[in-house]
Amino acid sequence: MSPEVAASPLRVLHVINTLAPVGGAEVSLANLVNELPAHGVEPNVCAIFAGGRLTERMSIPSERIRVFGFPTRGYVFDVRNLAQMVAHMRQSRAHVVHTHLHAASLVGRLAAVLAGTPAIVTTEHNLVDGLPGRWAPAARMLVRRTNAIVAISPSIKASLERCQGIPPEKISVIPNGFPFGQATRRDGEFLISFRAGLGVGSDAHLVLCVARLTEQKGLHHLITAMAEVVRADPSCVLVLVGDGALRGDLEAQAAAIGIERQVRFTGQRTDTADLIQASNVVVMSSLWEGLPTILLEAHGLGKPIVATNVGGASDVVLDGVSGVLVPPSAPECLARGIVRILADSAQAGAMGKRGQTHVVDRFSIARTAASIAELYRAALAGAAHVQRERAAK
Image 1 (cartoon, rainbow, N blue to C red):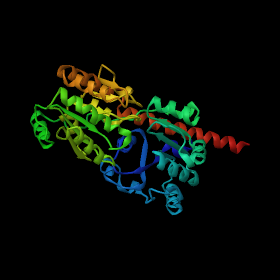
Image 2: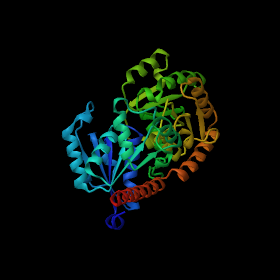
Image 3: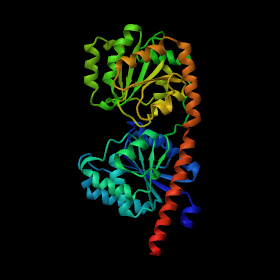
Image 4: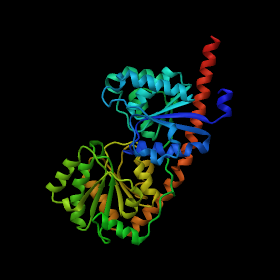
């Protein structure tokens, strides 16, 4: 590591697809960016596609946030924006470029190689089934030029080793962290009024699901499960928060099975902490995942969880202890898990408290940021060592 790097804050440029808070990767990046300065890192952020309200969650100066206008189709061939990104990386004199999500990792790492950035780090936020189609050769090259890879759960690390043949020593498991304790705690009067705004009575059970309305989230299985839940508990209401291409299909499904009055589609919202506090149970029905931020936030606020046992869900939810884990694509199991928790409020409360203790201890944002900062320094030291070896030949 050069004397300049050792003596000054590390300048890190994060590259992600968009700055709209559309999913866990984006929210997790905002949380990380806010914590890294406490660990000697100066974070900068750029989005390849579009800006958005995620910047409101980031406590860094606006001049350290840059948005490029890559097209969502054919972005790899946008030479003008790629050249601008390379110039931006050189101008920012970043010690590390840290990429997130597939498109940003492809473009961001390519730009970092062209810019001569000393070290490149990428985070894999989701399970990997294989190399990305026609870009497989480029992806292999970029993996070789990547100094360190972060997997946010052990299952993702195993997937990277199995599907892409990445050496295990190149992959570090560092889970997403969450800034527990920052949410405003709401009293009963507030929550009664808040529930009323959602069309849910104070004596009804509120089942909450926060997700993009896409195939990955398995929401058609959740709608099917809710028919059984409503039969067992007619006052129960599912509040489905999020937007996506499947909204119309899901609304039609709820109507077709006669539970449209028990399902609320709210669209995208930013008051997740209030929604969680107003709920009786938080549900995740995904078919595959990395390590969902909503699970951390729900347990952090003391709520029990019913979740499909995919990705890093079992790292967060302790089956039978802090919630219930069920197989994916099994609506009957999902229904049983929800009914089990709603049927016993004392058990549900105890589960939520145990979940809170578990995640606050293991998934704090301070712990995650400290591990990431340490990884940056190790990646830089390793890159410097390789350069010295090459110079000596």
